Length: 235
Image (cartoon, rainbow, N blue to C red; front, top):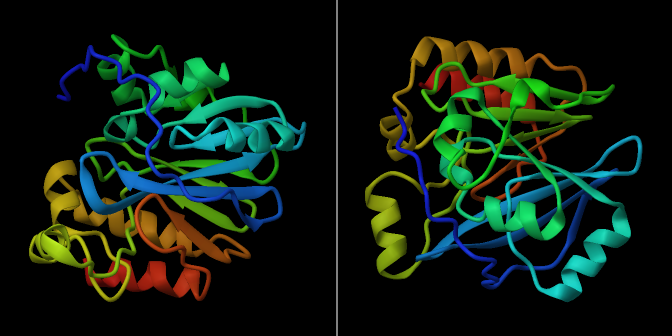
């Protein structure tokens, strides 16, 4: 069981990068992981068919960037891949007045600081699907948006970094020369290997899959289906 967190983090802007287009109706903003210099995280913004915006992960941004985001459409929904990605979710939901959605297993854990709807209640539409990582105890929510897969911890693509933090991340197996499901993640989420392999294969079979946007590391925009099949066989 995950422990409920009762102290919301206030709106805290660190050093986010620019609003970056990633495809039709898709943008990302990268930032550092709070308290872990050298490690990165990513928020993805999806413009839905009605023009409203869905956010996958929550990253506070400066007012100027907020104005750029609002110019894309009205903020409406925030999807949290899992409870471990909710550090800035409460402040973000309040600031942008969006409804938060999270895996069912995370709703109770987050309730003390952020009321969430279960991910099963997220309004879907053509070109937007939700997959659950049943092989993780976090039941991570993965989104397929058109030809793009959005993942939390299911796949990372973080190259080796520099300095003490870079060395530490390398030693624990979080970083590397190719995309992977890192050992620290596997330990934290108690992976059911067979279930995760099955999901990788299911995702690899999605027609037209062109890219994978992870929450940590570089975007993968080549041979996405082949990469998922490789991950399945390498577990």
